[in-house]
Length: 584
Image (cartoon, rainbow, N blue to C red):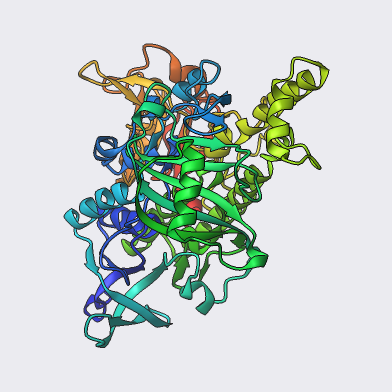
């Protein structure tokens, strides 16, 4: 048996942002030792990411922290429409129902998940993740600089420095996770290839305090887009007011030309911009922080080398458009953590770890391209509200939009088409939930050809039990008569063998294997009853067929046809597990 005393911990996680802390939390939840280091004194102190989609809320639900997150979040129904106006106090031009809250889409979102969306800023969500990670045994070093690492056949030696006293020291772990952000030193060290372009445009962000309740409470919206004759707003042509703490703390954002260097962020200029965006020339504000950030369009093509893994912003670098950043970080972590835990516990072979990169790198590329496209998709709206060559292009564009004549009619039709395009940012349940994994941790169904999408795959979730897809949500009833989701009876760090009431052969086969990480879920039986027949409609397999669901909720394998023979069930299940866990 291996001598574990040479290791200070199982996994060292560099970075305590959403990727790092979620990885550490999940590892601890699954019984692995994790040590997290951060060069900072504490977690995020600026709002940064905030949109939290349904899939991320499902991850939080699985990790047992959903209620904690909801306690500090702006609820789904208060996230509101996305508004476009001449200023917050000024004339409203158009609205877009957003985040699945509109009548046309709310049913899709409710049908697709037991979780809604929420809006929660990083300074609010990171302490929730951190507190739970620490409670479950994660150790943490703040004010600690990552210096370098060396990996060998059995582990990784990580060199660190205490930033408070300058002391350098080393720690030894079996694996290293680089969650060290968009300027990742670890990504550079292990030579991960980054494709795309960094810093292709710039944006100024100013956090400020001002009570704007009178302008916002009656039409709640976390994002207000401003087209104003009194100011130019860069690449996308709109300024932004984002509610951080409804309705008393805000972010004012506007683009700047990076070819001319850093923007003017003097107190006078910043106050002037905020007053234009709000539409109140006498507004008194308290400026909390001024900053700039750059629009990146870059992604890693692989996420690991040997015993070192990277994820989060280190591997996908993009603007906040579409609200995909934090969500993808959390989901990277959720994919990686169970695989590390299974290898550490001896349940799986090390080749399982290769599937992290195979599964998550395509997702990273997808969301980088989507986030940047979402910025470009403002172009039709920008064109409507700006008349090229006019003395004041924006004033002329707004006048044309309101004109009762033919030009106005054409402009209003163009706005409708522009809003429809923006659904791919603001009502894109498919972008957020339709990820499909292809790797050796998924056994393809030989009866299936390429997936056919019945609706637009960016806009609409297509629930399926195809291997490589996430298990569909359906409501079941537990032994107390309380409604629970299919997501509630699977996951939680274990593989789940899901069958129906006539699938007794599967239950006996799983029991005979005696695996500590495998549970059997018999839908229709007491504790997982299906009185609505919701699951029966969605399962796409015979009642005595079976699904093998991974700890992260993704379907690893399925047997579509009935199996009543215990020996055959055991043989099929053993083969599938061996394939998925790289034990063959």
